[in-house]
Length: 459
Image (tube, rainbow, N blue to C red; front, side, top):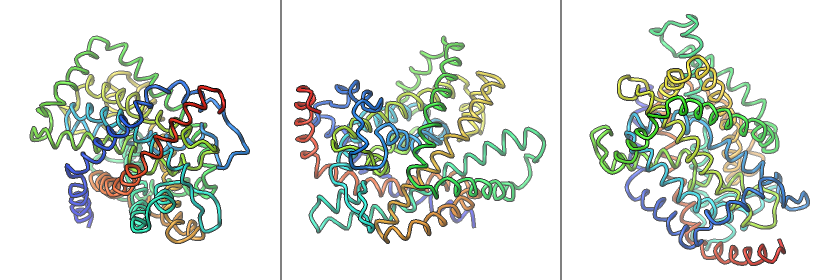
């Protein structure tokens, strides 16, 4: 049964992630970058002022502040994609895959600027009459009626794509490998099924206690946990890199040289390595996938461009900082070449090698908090998709389905978990990028007007 699931999900992901998606994500991102006149790099200081609360107005429409919107979005992106996803990128795609994750992040900054500006610019009302944001509302409110099927396609796939597959799977794996097996409570040769199921039940109960509170509770948890965990994670990696400073240039050089040869990738296929790097980068920062605009669309603001600026900080923190830190740790430790470890276990081994017992504690702590906050945020994303399709009264049923899915994700293989989400994210990118490309000139025009008002201090 589990082998059949793996075969189906792997085939689904490979079919969805063809070269055409590379063109859509990277080509679309480059178009946004040029059309916005490199806004993502010119207004970083203003974006930081926004998350510091300088322009917050509690009377503006929306539900959460700019900072909490970014924290909620980062809770969805900073997680297993940065820890297990980077390890998968290196072990399957080779070190060069990290370079293509960087490329995805750089163009993703522009993509997020456009998609998240649109999420506020074209907010729509749910069945209760409350304002909501996200690709499905953008499509319904701003695109011709003949294109509205894209909204339903996004929401339908999003209900599955936002299930906590990788997070549940890898969180339970690190608990098994670094607690139960290390303490002798579980034999390494024992069938992990019943352990995984039991751990999944506990995680499901914790998740249910948080997500029933809705976005405000999730955002409050994320705003408390995510910044502190990010600082802990990056701080630990900086210490490890400082202790191994002579190896850092070699690690960067390995990433850059392998990016255009693919020699270290499985089979040495350059295109396959590029595709896998973009796939992992897209999952890491979610630029163009549409999920990020579900959180940013709830921000309290009357200025759509402000939320676009806040959103573009996400790929910097998520991919350029945290993913790079993870990659350097793994490459310097060297076990990606000499062992069969993969996913979160490979990253945990690197931390342990470079920082000793402290490294094990850091990675264990960060995995627990990153994974759980991502699980909480993804429940909101899936609930938004469900309420768009079936009305707000359906949210509670989806939450029950979501919690139950944790049990399934706990017992399937890592390949099955990551392939399921990869395939769904690829399909979610089609309506998201299509609507953003169609409406991009309106965002560019609104941005030009905002810059004028900003220069005149009228915003």
